[in-house]
Length: 88
Image 1 (cartoon, rainbow, N blue to C red):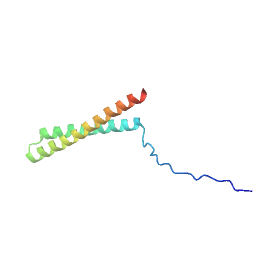
Image 2 (image 1 turned 45 degrees about the vertical axis):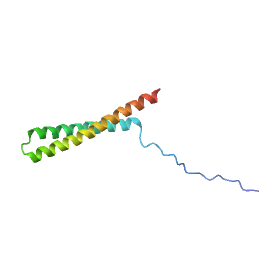
Image 3 (image 1 turned 90 degrees about the vertical axis):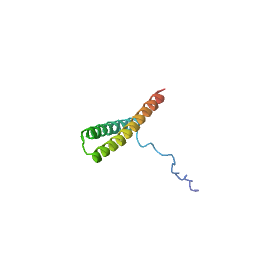
Image 4 (image 1 turned 135 degrees about the horizontal axis):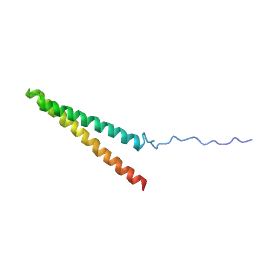
């Protein structure tokens, strides 16, 4: 009796999605709030510090964390457009 041929299983090269949109949306929202609060804290320290070195450092850190918060805001807007486009 002849043996039946068995097809070899191929590994799929399609990458799986790591997370859902909701999980990514929540993560971006949490990071936005975190970096916005950090920016506000360092902006407050900038206004209340008297030494010029600390004042400049607090301003720099505040600007950097504010820029990161702005980037997360853009990411949230992109996720909203993706979610709206997916529903159509």
